[in-house]
Image 1 (tube, rainbow, N blue to C red):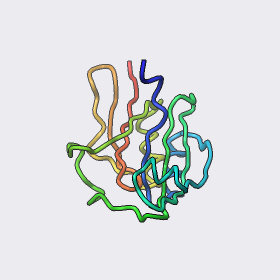
Image 2 (cartoon, rainbow, N blue to C red):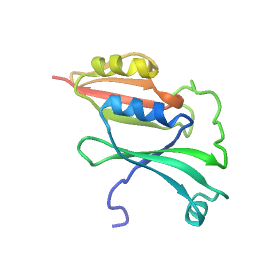
Image 3 (tube, rainbow, N blue to C red):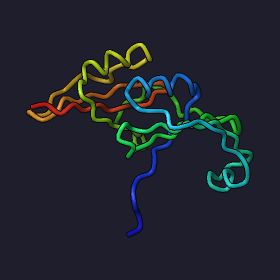
Length: 146
């Protein structure tokens, strides 16, 4: 078997503190912060002179992680408008299962979250929505119902 597990999803941000606050409000836990630089970082990323701050954030069950990275050098490159629609090729989103979708959306609003569409019901199984968080990150939320 080639893959043992998914280790993390990486997201490049400009405002590390705002991104951390958003995901902590969502219910994730800060595992640690640090800096990455040097030859291994250059080789791995294919960039030269890599120096970035990172934060590892994990889900409460400890099985999934987000790695937030803020590049000091080389400077991060903007990917265009931050309010891009969900159907652009290469657009990514991260989805989380939550206990109370409406409460979660309400708690995330002070951290800049905006609904991308609306809260939708999928049959008698789930309430689902996408919110746009810091840096334009699309975060999916799902509440199992019934």
